[in-house]
Length: 400
Image 1: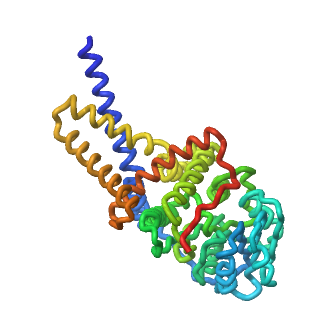
Image 2: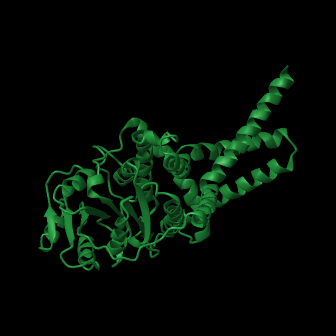
């Protein structure tokens, strides 16, 4: 009897190990590989005809800025220099709650509509207030601490030629000029990987959520995401997808941003984003209905949900089960698998030690940043359960 129980337990652990390995592989590599195959087949059987007709409708660029006096002048100059027909690009800057010189600096430029209130209610409230002053059919949102490439507006709005497109996601690029190599290397590689996946997502069907640094929506499809929303850009863009519209990816419209100034500042940002991820899953629970949204649900679960939920659970679980199976089995596969995991975590530990000693060996920062991201999900989940992550968060300091 005891032997039967032991056999069943070991069999269960083996099944759980292989299931965990599959989830980890699929989430971080397999989904991208599968999308490449699906996109290749789609192009063979349903080639997309791209139009060449120019489309330059009036558009509004909305920038929410809070205490950005050190950077806001660069943002203004960058916005005024964007390549778009004169009179068709309207600029609205919202500086609600700013207690520094941000509002005064913006007020010097008559071409910009300044909205300022002493009350700070968060980025979502500022964006929503700006939309009430926008009289164009297309809206573009950009963070105050980013710079846009000159052709970004043209490259975004051209997609609205298609009535099926409800929004456009620009690309986020991290400037690799930071004195803090960990955040520069880790965040930069992360966004290169995300950009690769977004391109595949868009080619297959739709991007699964926009990044707030640069994204656009049709005004008539915009829906207030609600109060106390942490990932407003993500919720706003996927609400549009819920309505049956696509969110396309435009790599030639990008926002340049410096990385967090150090790992402590990056930890603040990742914890807030992670808390917002769990909040988003609750608010977007309809997207788990794969019968209602077959393509969108497939992408949403594969690209986002698995990485937010099962992956941070299976990373330590696979390691612990692997240790048990090594002691209970003489199979070489389990021994090599455990050796590979130990080697990876030693690399991550080495990256952490070298970072603390300010020794630059960039490739060791990659495994450390990977572990750091997954640990941040635990922090974010705890904040989500406690409900103590405010929309009035402390900004993460970034490199100048």
